[in-house]
Image (cartoon, rainbow, N blue to C red; front, side):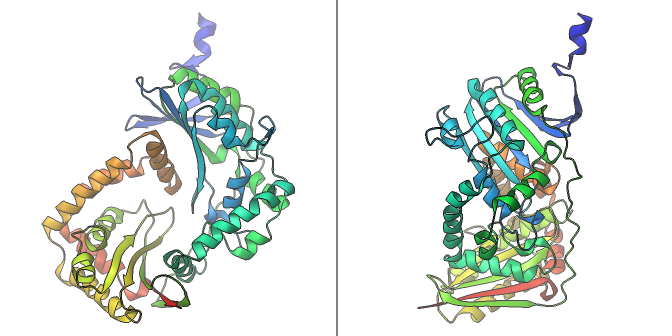
Length: 437
C-alpha cells in the first residue's frame, strides 16, 4: 500500500507540481521537462477537448523567415515518426476517423493544435500530439506540396481590401517590434521557405517547456495525467533556453499615414491607436470604450456614420496581445472620395468622448453586452479551449475570465480617461485604401 501511495499524489502520478486552481481549471507543471498542464473535468461529458498551445507565433520570427510559424502549422499535419501518412491519409484523416473536430491556428503570440473527440479516443489524440511535438516529418518534398496552399491563403488576404490595409497599417505602426509583420508573413519569405529553415525553427521552439497541454471534458484526472506522463514524458526540455523577444517599439511621437491605391471592392478608412499590453490595468476600460464607439448597433459610429450614410459599415478591431499593440477603428466610405470626410467624422466622435465623456447608461449597456459575448465565447469545449489558449498567449490563462469581471467595474470617468490618454495623434496610424477600377 505504501508503494502504491508513492506513485500518486492527489489522484495523479508523481512528477506533477500543482500551481493554482481558478474557475474550475487546475494548473500543474510536469517537473521533468517543464510541460504545463491545464485540466478541467466534467463528469457528464461524453467528449474530451485537447489543445496543445506552443508559446510561439509570428512575434518570434525575424526578417527572412517570416511566416515560419504558419507554414510549420501546415507541416505538422504531414505526419510524424509514429503516425506516418499511409495510403494518402493525413493527420486530419486519422483523427477524422475517430470522429474528431480537429485543426490548428497560428497568431501573433501563439500556435495551437486541438481536437474535440469522443473520450474513448482521447489517448490516441494525446499520443499523436506528443509524437509530433518532437518527431514531425518536415521534408522538402512535403513543403513543396504545401506551399501552394500557403500562397493561396496569402493571396486571399492580399486581395481583400480591409485585410490588405490592416497588414500595411501594422507594418507602419510598428517599426522595431515583430508585430510589424503579419502572421502569414511576407510573400518573398514564404516563397523562399525551406525545410532546413523550418526544421531549425521547429527545433528552437517546439519543446515541452514552451508548451501547455489543456484537457477539458469527460476524462478522469488520474487517466489524463497518467497518459500525459506516458506520452509527453519521453521528451526532455529544450537543449537551449527558449529565445525571448526583447524588441520594444520606440515611443511614437506623431501621426503616421499609409495610403494604398489598388483594385478592390471597397474603400476603407482605418484609424489605429497604440494601446498597452493585455494585462495592463487600462485594458477593461479600453474594451468598454471600443464597444461604445463602434461595436454595437446602438454605438456612436452607427448613429453618426452609418445612419447618415457616410459609411456602409463601421467597426472596431481590438484584441489585446502580449505586448503593446493597436486598436483599429475601421469604416467603409460610401463615396469613393469620402476618406477625409469620414476621418473627420470619426475624429469628432473621439473628441466628444474626450471632452464630454460617456454616460452611465452607455457603460452599463456595453458591460452587459460584453458579459453576454464573453459567456458565448466559452460555450462548448472548443470555445473554452480557445479562450484559455488566447489567455495563455498574453501571459495568464485566467485573463479572459478575469476580464469579464473587470469590465463590470469600469466607470464613465475611466472610459473618458483612457480616451484622453490613448486616442491622440502621437499614437495614431491612419490607413486609407482607395479602390481603383
